[in-house]
Length: 113
Image (cartoon, rainbow, N blue to C red; front, side, top):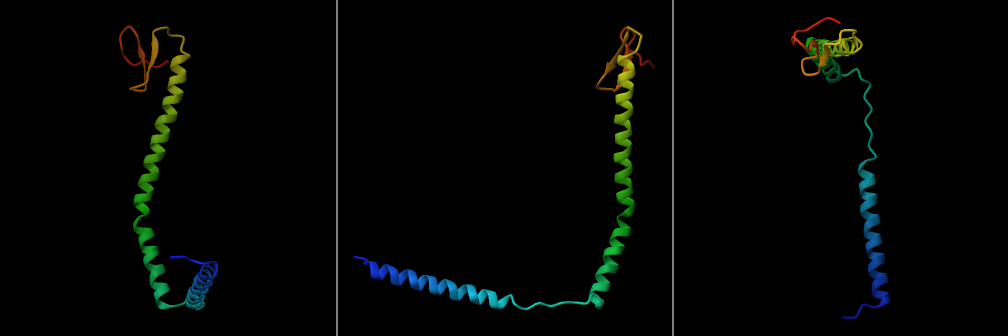
């Protein structure tokens, strides 16, 4: 089966014409635009529901933020304590990274540098 140049051009033209027809049909469907003023009952109800949900989750957001702040404070205090322990004049003082405490080498008890 031989496909000549004229048959190829004819097929290409038909495919291009079909693609253009389909693309113009899809453009025609999207030309409608609806603009709402925002004063509708549905939008007011959605806004009220969003506000209610925001207020309901307020305490949860506050708890999460408080917990994150406490964790940050613990880490910050641990860095300060580690620096004090390492700069201590007590030769038996060492920093224990697992417990985040400054300990005495000879007794293993926590010390304040």
